[in-house]
Amino acid sequence: MARYAIGDVQGCVTELRELLLRISFSSDRDQLWFVGDLVNRGPDSLKSLRLIRALGDNAIAVLGNHDLHLLALAFGKSRIKAGDTLDAVLAAPDHGALIDWLLDRPLAHFDPAHGDLMIHAGLPPQWTVPQALAHAGELHAALEADPAAFFDHMYGDQPDLWDDALTGYDRLRFIVNALTRLRVCSCVGRMQIKAKGLPPRQGSSLMPWFEVPSRASRDTRIVFGHWSTLGFVNRHNVLGLDTGCVWGGSLTAVNLDEPAFPLSVSCNGYQQPGE
Image (cartoon, rainbow, N blue to C red; front, side, top):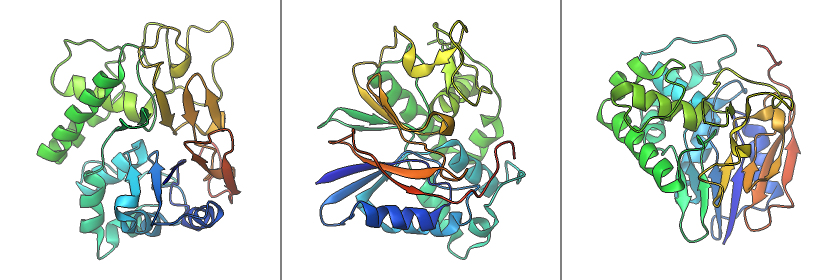
């Protein structure tokens, strides 16, 4: 069995189909890991969701920030933003089944047989992998118990530093921001959620989350997406797979047992940076 991890699809279903052909995907032998952001900004979020859901047990997907935005819209707790391409999902006759399927996706996936962890964005340096999985489980339980209440409190950038004593929605908001929005933080783990673009220059107090020297998760290989300007990353025991499909880059897959040889398909530019 081959395990292929795939970067942020974001509704680019034509490119996803081409990539599955490129890797010669077979439902008899292969497993697909999707790093989140299955939807939004690309041209066909509805067909992307339907395709990935139809893969059944062959597909493992974690939630990204755009997936959570779709869920918040479905529960009436957010508004359509400029650049969103989610109307077709919300109007589809099978939208209820698609939303239920998406709501059931985890925030983190760990493969104990191979020792790989998949998340959408990042981990604060204080978290070990068992702690990350426990916190992802807390968040998933809150989503299952009362999604509308969670989405009422999800948005915001604070708190920005982990504390074991955090409780309630402050605790959940930190967890969701780390797992689905984090790119850079300070050496003590203070997150700068709004930071985008290229990594900070040398001498900055901020650094990519996976470059923090004291990171407690450094002995586990972590597969992630979310940061399109990085391109393909295979260093510091991490695999970064967001290669900017929706921005005119590529959609990338990597065999997790042969990570030095990523496979990509070029993509149309469906959005412009800054939109």
